[in-house]
Length: 176
Image 1: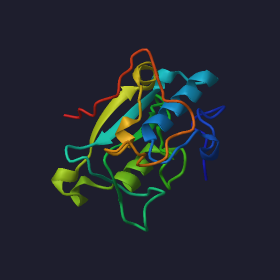
Image 2 (image 1 turned 90 degrees about the horizontal axis):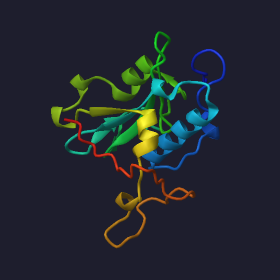
Image 3 (image 1 turned 90 degrees about the vertical axis):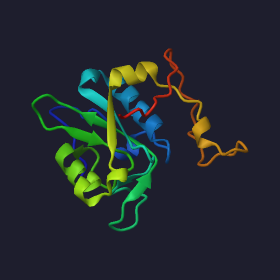
Image 4 (image 1 turned 60 degrees about the vertical axis):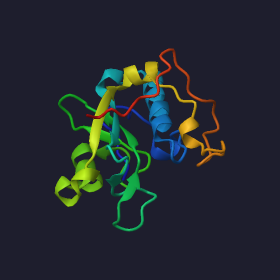
């Protein structure tokens, strides 16, 4: 069951109403932040874009829609959105999860991350949080990381133009 976070209108549309392109999680989250800002119902400062990666660029996440059974999907990185609703329950927005959208923070951590005790140390996740308002102002991508050496798409790109902002920053995943 998909649940609205907090009282009143939900910060985001239902999953099926979100802008989504498989394998473009950083853009999916940017579009989600853009939607939240346009609705002006919740302060964007309550939201954090969460980058998940590690030095090996191999992070296991469970309960992903592209997964098979109870096995994890191994991403080079993943980007999700956290709603830190100061006092209320916190929620994770992950358009790639098989868990509810949004998902209670504690449930997401328990089900999608599992315990670090179950993961070899070299595959443990590192996390970087960026406030959503900063992300909207500074994120940009030419999508070149999604092309192979001959310039062919590894996965089909979103139908909308590349995201360009004044900051023109491709976030480095410096998670040290």
